[in-house]
Image 1 (tube, rainbow, N blue to C red):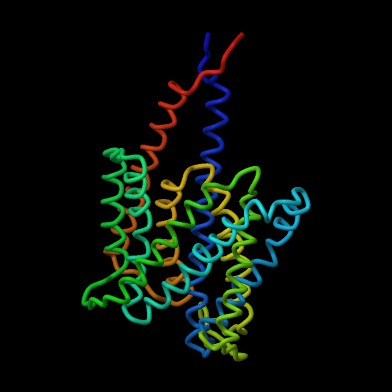
Image 2 (image 1 turned 45 degrees about the horizontal axis):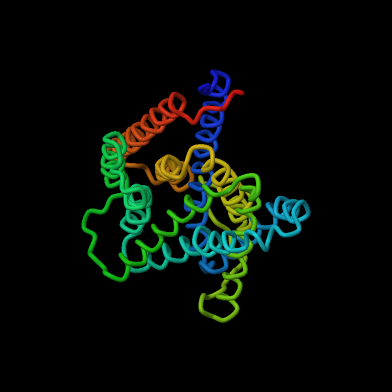
Length: 327
């Protein structure tokens, strides 16, 4: 004899998914502050390598207690999970940032951003190939609506095609996809924050090697930057980016993905573009055009459609889930 999931089980699952959705939004909000705060630093003479090294290094130190605790709890932790941690650091931390900024040097920022944020569509295609099951109409419609919205948010009018830049941006999109796929594998054996800390440490070490060997220039002058009409020393925006934007972004992001799944998390991540527009408006006086607000609404509509599909899947799962044997 079998029994289906109980109502308390369904309610608990719903709370977990809601918490994951909130975490994903907070992660996108945290990440979105980085660009508008780093931009004036780069304009004032900081090199990209120096900014990324400080960003990753400080964030890795702030999240280090979670990694240390995981190692102390399980002595074989690194031996069991080093591949995932290394992969996360090389792709989700270092790869997506290095490839994106390399692409940005060959094409307009908006175009590189648009290609990088094709990651949710790549994940839908990957799941299609892996499972040989076509996505639902809600997911397909949500994908199209969200991408149309993204095109409207990031102005690509007048952009020229650059093959190498496009390939670099696609590489960044693949790395963003890897971020969600690897984070989805976190759990009790691999605590999400420990994964983020280890990945940031790997990324910081890689950036240090690139800067030390001269592959990436390292310039970190003591400068002042202007944000929201106020003149601030360099360390205030940089340490906000490292301590808040990056630390909270990765911590909440990797905690959200196991709760809501890589696909929905990747679509929620598109809201980072909207939040970045808000920060640029607030801090850099870059006022969005009306069409960008329309694009933002379409992105949110696409996320809602994918969310509806996820909810439908969970309801079906609650009805047809494997039953618990009863003696």
